[in-house]
Amino acid sequence: MHKIDILMATYNSEKYISEQLQSIINQTYKDFHLYICDDVSTDSTSNILSEYKLQYNNTISILKNETNKGAKYNFSSLFQNSQADYVMFSDHDDVWLNNKIEVTYNKIIELENTYSKDTPILVFTDKFVTDDKLNITAKSHNKSEKFNTNNFSLNRLLIGNVASGCTIMVNAALRKICGTINSNALMHDYWLMLTAAAFGHIGYINIPTMYYRQHNNNQLGAQNNSILNALKNIKTGKQNLKNMVFKNITQAEAFYNQYENILSDSNKYILKEFIKLRDKRNISFIKSMVHNKFYKSGILKNLGLIYAFI
Image 1: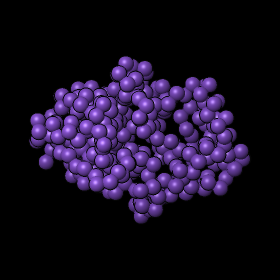
Image 2: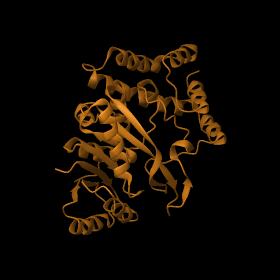
Image 3: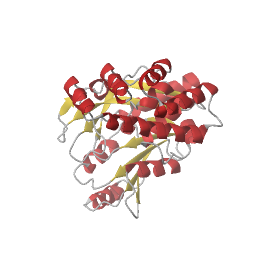
């Protein structure tokens, strides 16, 4: 068994998949296996994957869905079947720097040496944001998004995720305690961040390890968090902003129900208080938000949050 599993979901990936596969093959750290699940692509993705499988048979395994399931299902099913010591996730349209695995692996080993190998640990990194031709448009995705990468407490993460799955590595202890990624999870990476915050530790590497390609077909992409854009988003209406929070609350309920028997009393309290936000408005919402530190990253985002519930 290889020490690291890399899990990749593909769907109509013919335009970019070869570059990403080659960037993974070229990694300085070699003790990994790449599991790819294709979601019924209708272009030449399957042919490209087959060619790489022939060339790198001991490194690549390919699975195919019978019907289109979506990225969350693809990643979740791959994750559920992994038995590796460490797990990483890969999008189909990015390009990794050749030391991405090595840098991330060294960090997770460092944290395991500090907290023990039995402690659930997640590590994620920064990334370059690029256009479709890999021209860099932002040297730091997390700075451009104004993410707070100094505070990974559960109350902060419940209101918003700060880690992209394509930058994440988790250890076996986190994989085991997570088990099945809940169907109400907003995305696999978000669920893993919540699990690590509740039961273990999160480490951040403040350097880019990949090119995060932005193009018309991105399912989830980088956002422009300028003041003008924030104001424009606010003007789209309270209900849109509320709906974002309600989805997070539904995820929090699922998280509480799945892990109720092993959650600490303090984390139970935080989750219950967050779930109660669904019925709070005006001053009661603001008081709970401040008291429990349900803060998003950035002043404008928090003002938008308050605006949605007054």
